[in-house]
Length: 152
Image: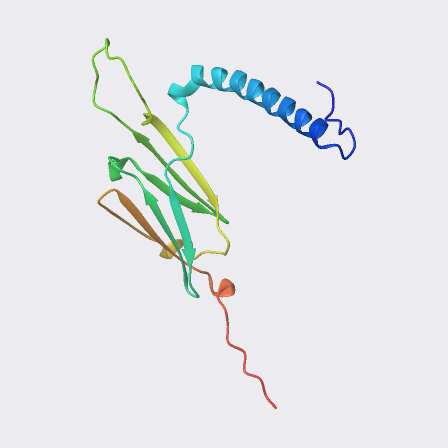
């Protein structure tokens, strides 16, 4: 493919080049997508969905894990990285089933997040309720904001 060439400030030439580029990208994406579909059974994408928030004292992680057995989860913090691992399972299906849409993957997952502050790893608390994992990660003393008095 040649590099996108603008034909000066002329509007029609520019639009034609952009349309040609769009068609090329759709073709490339289509080729890649067909290759990905072959390995889709083992690919879980971005799972679980998480929110990571903070206040002065803690970081808070909330992860959506519907249908997951909390006993199958592995949560760890090392240095500035939090890692959540587990597996999803679906009831056995007949072999002759025809899918019209399949968006729920099965298999193992692993999600790692870089934390924005140092953590007291021995004080982390995790609670699981109704498919939601809530983790409280206390900030290390050196990562907390300290009030400084100004003298005059």
